[in-house]
Length: 403
Image (cartoon, rainbow, N blue to C red):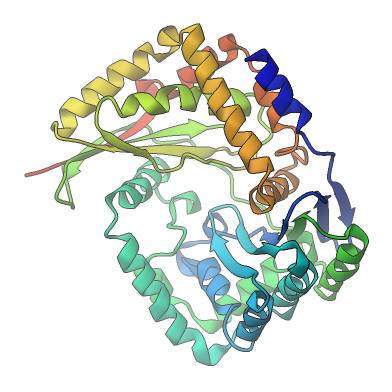
């Protein structure tokens, strides 16, 4: 195990180069010339947590609209030589990315920057794209694990923006006007709110020249996430909206930059596999992130042949016993699994780029590149302490039972 860990640590790449453009935009360059591919992504300080009831769904709608004509031609050009381009909206950030073979990095990066700088959202396509999102929402609603995740966030945060659905609610999407969309776009898509990350095989000097097109954006005002409210812990029982019974748990998880972030990752791994001994389960938010001052909500959705109440009881007993049940072998296995996961992430340009961007946004610029060292340094005692975060008393519990 010691030799394997040493080999992992030797694979840590060099520190990325971080540049600040004249309008406040941040450019993070992380070349790895042995890579056969590249990835470029723009992270924007936007997402559902920045919204209100009046702007519910606006950042997801912006993400969709940016890819429509004439920006659709931007996506087609980027993908013409084997790259692919897409976007995702989270609570804390919106992500636009392009990735592909190393030979196409220059064109892919150029088109991604154009996509953001153009800020082209066609008003005449608004109603069409709303319908597309409403169809996405309808499909999401068919998945009980996703529904459980959303309901746990809602139970935990009540009326806070943190409880809003990342895709937007159906009613929220339908209410959005073009004026609200334009306002959100102009407020968030500015230099102070953008991080561009390029990873894999590329020329850093040329990449920085391409990135300077972002200076065409106004500096703007740096947007701040709303304060993270106290979680409303407790238990709620309801009739299951699906064919199966299900129990969900929501736990506070520290954000990027927190001193115990890596220990919590190992703690989660040490108990994740044990859910499977009780029932079919899914950690809906297995990969969690958020700034250190807020953190995130880690959610677990469990179903099985047993009634939900029986599953709840068994999980509660397991969680209470978890700190004392952490044997040295279980600790070593969990730590090795997390180290393997981190190492795999560092070898994927798109994955390590996303982590680097999150680190810059959340004031932990070494998140990603230093995570192997941090995980490797975690002790069994630190994991025991982290497991106490997942005690039944610190849980939002939702029971879905059949009639």
